[in-house]
Image (cartoon, rainbow, N blue to C red; front, side, top):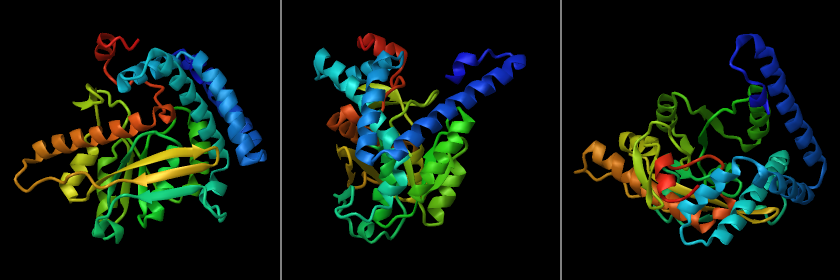
Length: 314
């Protein structure tokens, strides 16, 4: 909403600020409504509202285009249906955020968050050293932190602040329930290294476009990708561990922790190791997306424009 008021001229800055404030006020009103409702009813409302609005937005073309590249085996009818479910899941996530404190701190049995650890490495199970956890925006991606913490790892999450500072403060206040640290994406290298050296793990969502970044294969097409996890692993020797969050019901989730990616070999040059580990990471992320594309938040173009046009994604 706020961008509708943006003119780029300083004399209209107050109008932009008003737009930002109104956007945050609407979000606060929505969260207040969702907070009053029981969690399951809030999720149902979120699904219906965002699931109905999303496919009418301009961003829906990016959702469909990303799905066409990521899931070439799906028919166009399946892509359209999956695209609608992407928005429905986003609505459910917004409802979850309104109830996040209850979800994460639930003492109900069984817990709404099931953690499945497929990593049988003894050092990992004993949490002997910090890890670099990587994930995609799947299911309710915020809950990856709950799974990581339940596995015994204190973690700091790298995040991009929202463009609306009022809304960002509101979101950060709600995310405090996760009981993790937060590192802003800009100039994150030094804080990430410091966290790892202090025994804290790092969490990154690596399925987003990195403008100006290097190209690496992702689901059969080259995409600009962060090399930060591989760089950190090469610098510190900490393992890169993929994590997936899947919504298995309106009020049920499964967090799966996978075996670590292959570490850098002693005879690998640093640049070669970073590239190979990033390629391995993208291969793992692609598998997670294709396993559950209807819960993948993909509202921004993921691959280069020319690549997506050549593939007929738009």
